Length: 200
DNA sequence: AGATTGATCCAT
DNA sequence: TGGATCAATCTG
Image 1 (spheres, rainbow, N blue to C red):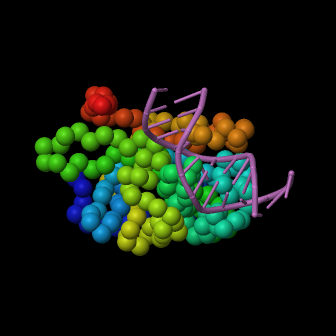
Image 2 (image 1 turned 180 degrees about the horizontal axis):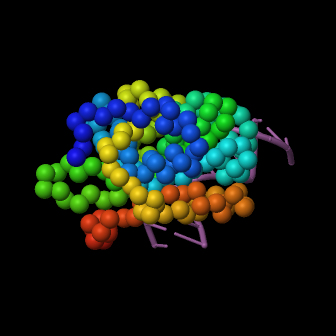
Image 3 (image 1 turned 90 degrees about the vertical axis):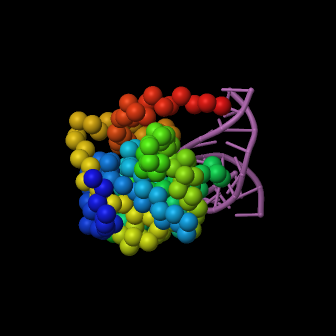
């Protein structure tokens, strides 16, 4: 099922309307390569931040040192520190000059054990950053090069019916923009649901 | 509900 | 140059 060789999604994939790209990222495989290992995780939860008018988008405040990357070429990472603790991973979309990005909120890591143990879902953008061992050195990386962080298509079909559209989290300050259904998720599979009991 | 935590941005 | 803000998470 998983192809032996898969290439990073090309820049053209990201150079399109952000809402479309966001939905199409669901079911794709995020690859994170460190010196020790290469991790593969299915993308299951994303949020779109779309353009200068979107008050929830950091770039609505204009072009600054921090938001500069979002104004640049699509396919680059936008990683930033929030609350002094969490590194959130985004991928830049749309044409150069139009600031937009997609926040990765949830992952399902590939099973590594041979009898699969039932891997937990990584739920929340802060946990995603921690799981992927991200820090600010991962800001502004080109995901089309297949070096550190990239996305592959392993051929998993995702139908529109599976995609839930929800309001974005934690952006109440954006007033009416917070009501946009620009968060897209895949349902938690039953195999994971049954394993969501957390033991202390 | 409250604490945590530090980079960023802007104006008191 | 200070201080408010913040695409969150953990604990109680």
